[in-house]
Length: 594
Image 1 (tube, rainbow, N blue to C red):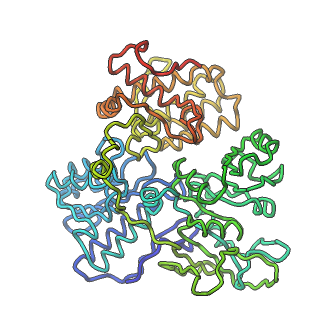
Image 2 (image 1 turned 90 degrees about the vertical axis):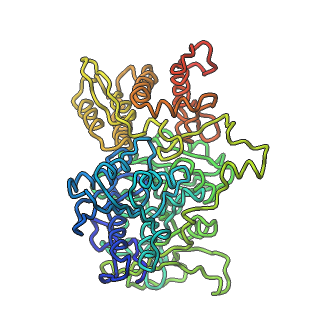
Image 3 (image 1 turned 180 degrees about the vertical axis):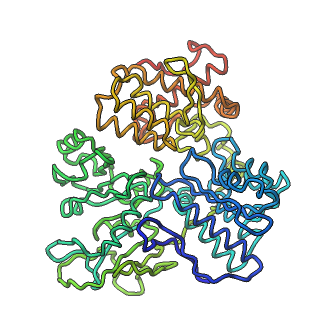
């Protein structure tokens, strides 16, 4: 059976996995079929939340019927396994659970594993082990220790059908795998061209090469990405908006990469009402124009050497998982040459435009012989309206289990390096080793409000964002508080709060700058007091400096080069000292007065 592709469907409202096999009859055919179904489910949240580890679960009853299904909507929402077990009810007893990926217990609650054990699941089939080293194998061991039979594709189950199903599991979490094994996000190059290989006429006119159906699918590609990147030429020529336009949910960040900062003063990308824009440029370029962009709310990031790889490594450090490149041929060639492009989506329209000087999708790569041409891997062909979509990988996905020396192995190789005496602990994204320290970790807290009523907030970030507007006598502010409170994930709560702060700064409570540190500290103290395992995690860092590793948040984070104030890390160290019973005067924690 040919490898099924993660591909765009003709229906613009969804992206689906197309299973191209007839009903299989091999020994592990049933397992492969339901693992593919779990991978299909895992991909369902794409386009509605910022990309995150994608989990899907299918519960098959002892009678051979699907008893329950679920998928992770976003970090902080119910685990796929919890949803599936709840849906199955009593039919879960003695059932088999199919998971596209080993559960990742990033926060110490073990909810996915506990749900399957308590639900009475007898057997678990897992498409792939978790790619992050500090989570890999933990859930498999926990399940086996409780007496469940666990089969992992490629280890306990083998065969062609099993291999194909496992590849689908790899594809649905390709961005996470890239993060685990490399220092660049998963990058997709997308372009539309005529049958004779042109992305515009000689005049530069390009509206429209592809059909409406193809353009709708491009909106979906944007929606499942953390960011969309273009070059300066695209901004000057096309004045794009780069929005997802899918009716709500996740909107990707917009990135402009330009050496000279030769950009128009007025452009659609400078409109911050829906989504933010970041401009990356050479250090020192057009300082006056940088100030103009800053006045519009555009973030400018300077690089000593501006290359696609430097830029991608920077956005990797900012926690981005997936980037969509919609640039012209010059930047596309540079990105390909830098080795940062993983996959290509080429929409080919049945049109011929001609033109000696008409641009092509990829500029000069320095190749002079056809034997030097780059061959795509796992190529898929799909007709989209009148167009043909050709997609494939420029490079294989990194090994899901990269060869990374263990701490003991490192010490043997170099005895001067002791991993047990680390003086700085960095934390940022919630799935990282110390991610539960983050204000975005999905741990509900209960705090009394101004009226003395106990109110539940789904995370520290929910509480923090809402309190920007609490007490403001305005129906819009009050509605915003309720929207933040009901947001499904910390990321969505942050998006609502930040967006409203940008659009209507007059709705922010007048004392916010004076109390925001106290608001954050109160929520953090509540969180670490409620959950013993989180308090234990915090206390385990005693003796280390805690740094929130956001390279762009210079207030709560440490900044790109340590220039940030790191107030989140400092608050956690203050809380740690309080838990350890140390008086604030005896600590070396910096003052938190602002």
